[in-house]
Image (cartoon, rainbow, N blue to C red; front, side):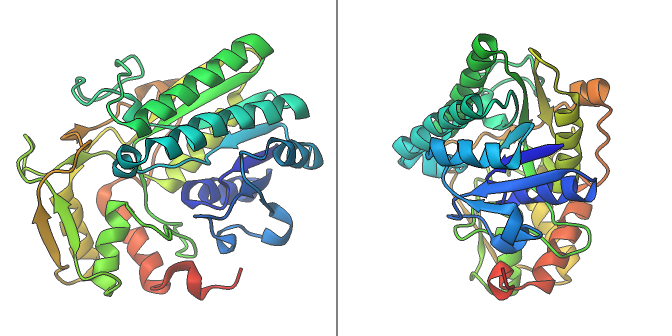
Length: 332
């Protein structure tokens, strides 16, 4: 398939692009490069279009020129704490930006979309593991804006004959198994790279927020899923899109690890203690978020293979050890 990936030079978007390319598809990235890395996109001179999703006309032109059959929409702001401090930016990018993507698709005659959503659309106090039928009562602007984008997509699909699949991620993590590509942002907020940055001396220590949650060691529990498993799910989902059909699936491993367990797994991979400090809870952090992936396993035959926490951390460490300064040391 010919697929355009908004945010396709970002962490998850580029992982899916590389997977699609290896599987014989024809993907192209559309990215404003505020957080994306050209080096993460193979053949970037012809597979990377620099543009913002707010530029509807430019995006529509890119869809037409690539003769795209489907869109994978990754471009978004994605930090819970940042969304609390700056909700305007989140509504502008995550909601208005998604409307721009849908309008560009209508202009270009593209009717299939995969949307990168999040576990943050669910309520913090829902029964675990979360299922697609769990109540969507988000408690942060990040979750609210991603849920609003889901509603937009459903409304456009109903009115304009589009088909869609919403994929609600839990914690995307890990690096390509060959060690060539991994997680590298200009403003990093994810736990595993933050811990590994501390191991490499890129930051003095990693902060662990909250030690009084009702979990097995008092720290937050999260469900980590490897980007290779995410990419496989995206390929299965885009191939399964049918006219007038809309689906939503959770993407997680079905198990959870505490922050301290992730830290210990990183120390095991690195082979030495990693500096860390405990701090009070952050606003917007629920104690436990774990997915049930049963629906996508049953419907699409998804089979996550790399989402054990130690396997995820080992792959991430191979990338960081090989590229200690991230993509800044690689040519575009």
